Length: 242
Image (tube, rainbow, N blue to C red; front, side):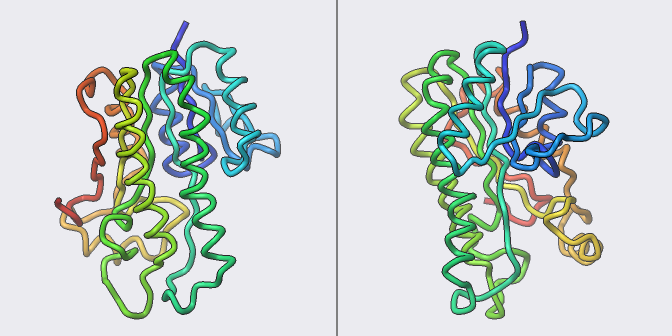
């Protein structure tokens, strides 16, 4: 029986790449609100899909209960997130602030809260996707007064802090907790017409691929990272070296 990996945001982009990377070694249960409609079986081959709103604790508890029936949950990965248009703090509406913080940060908190007992059982590992923006305080490459997406940056900075808190609290149980901070990655969160321009501003000369983030996540969940916890791994092509 394969160990179980539960992955949020699995319908697209980085989350889908992670589900596909893990399915060789794990029984993967992919969570996403988009799975409320029957998913296209040709797009989601080799892993289980489950509709779930990560801001709803009852949804998460049901999803974990379902996944546990497939075996011990040895890996939990949170890739579910949303962003918004570039705007200044003065321009960000209360509604937009609450939406992004609720999904990106509160959703992470709830996932941690629900996953703990399952990870304690398996002595497993968890990885949470943050962002380069969460480290520098602005999205994109220029800290411009025209807007930093402070709501998105704050939510991802919060994820980094939660990772460190969760890693400290779960270390006595043999559980490792880490984060990955991607830079500019190909996918629907960045309009395709901007990819070429962004690539010219990245030291490695190109955008990252979702599969490259997935490989980093897989490494952190593997035994190859058995003494790594509380770490935020940058996957950004050299745009931030800290």
